[in-house]
Image 1 (cartoon, rainbow, N blue to C red):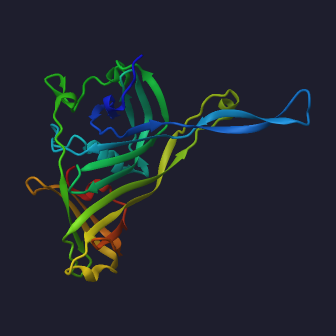
Image 2: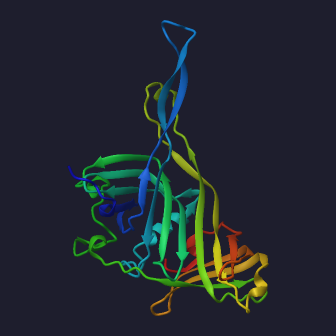
Image 3: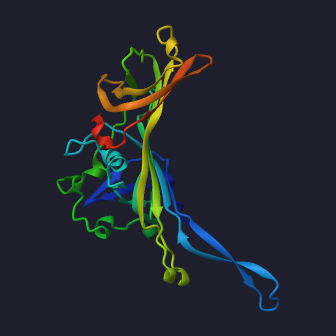
Length: 320
């Protein structure tokens, strides 16, 4: 008997006609649950007594999550290897997210998640940690596609691993990934001077509030055929986060600040080389500041974008 270890799992995303190998940390989960409906049943021997029968014909949306360390390398199109994840999390068309197929290969199985979408992408700008994107999402149907040798290319009719082809070899498998540590630089411009030095950490979250359309037919329910969600719509997108700052003599007067119209720019600078790696501009944005007493006094700025009509990729001026 052999066991499947999570650390040995490989994650692949198929989007369009391309297959992407996504290098994650060990934090990867995926599952799907089913909805039960109970009903009263009379017994043959005593019509006054009833017991509860059960019917399971509906599947809830599948869920998944994983953490992706952002790396410095780029592909042949001058995009970072992990930029496809950010594209799938940010681009909207008629309130519909781009869907993809996700495969997870373990030591004994290959699991397939169809109709997957990314509902949340979070970034932590903390100088002591690797710059990582935490991803959560949902999908329509989770199945076991085959064993560990399942051919994803053949199943998805992919003739090559474009755009990851170098001398007929899959560059996604052999290219190096170099994670990095960044520190945050923040500017707040609401018409007044704001001291944004001594930043302790920044969190940025892209949240897509999604509603799934159930696929239900009377015939399938009577035949006990499992019905899976069929489509989704994004009702609201929220770009928000928190900026945490040490309180000093230069910024002590900002502990009760607030603004409903400010230009916020967050930059992740490489600790090694002091150059920009990731930058996003949120304009207009609102924020409220609150003081947090502790051994060291800090203050936090809770912010949220006020205009979510543009695609997020247009607000990111570095990385993509």
